[in-house]
Amino acid sequence: METVQKMEKKNFSRVANKKHSSGFYVNVAFESLPAAVNQLKSRFALNADVFRVLISLAPPPKAVAKTAN
Image (cartoon, rainbow, N blue to C red; front, top):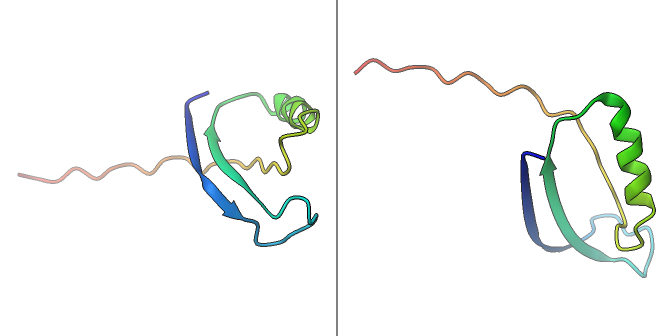
């Protein structure tokens, strides 16, 4: 795990269940093998406190241009 960013509680833009109209958002940056993603999704599914999970592939970081002084 590289970074964890805890964000404030927000209302969901699409309410799928009246019981869960808002929640805390968290961004987690990590590196893993592709096969580990399914295992991670399964672990989140077992946790009743986790309502939604979105895992996406981050683009590679852009190179920073050097400036002449």
